[in-house]
Image 1 (cartoon, rainbow, N blue to C red):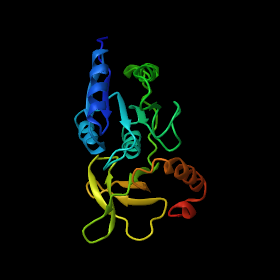
Image 2 (cartoon, helix red, strand yellow):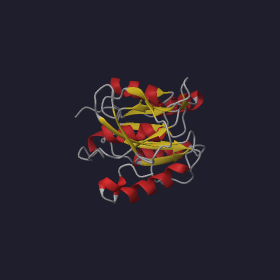
Image 3 (cartoon, rainbow, N blue to C red):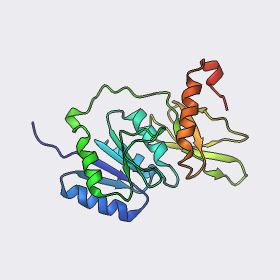
Length: 220
């Protein structure tokens, strides 16, 4: 069997982090690409699906929470690593759709150990089912020119984006339909840069999803 280099996609809005990580990981044998935000990462995913996705959590536009949840649903065989300076330790925070966590600011040796613990491409389980109804986490974008609140949603099926109005007092869970492929999308809105709120929201959603669907569907 021919040896193929593991393909790695690094997503971070800080250019210095992308450059330093890309250089180091390319030197030790990874086929590395990078993207400056979640939307750019989706463009890269359309070109080629990586073996490993390493994504910052707090990014403008599309957060890492949303990107990772889209990848988990659309490409369940991709190994995912979340990275952030907002959480400590090496455990994946509740609500983050990742296989591992790398604390920003810690040594590159820690990242290399995490990468080394992940399955190689030919060992990656291909039967991990996507969680089709797990909500994607979306940061509120603010208000448009008319003052209406909206978010930008990335469809987990076709990977294209579209704006979605969220007027009024939003419930915890919402559902919509992709304007491009007509696929159903379930999402939860997180305040901009409010990474601390995600674990609490995740726990609340888990409790809601244990109730009958008619009760949980749009519970605030």
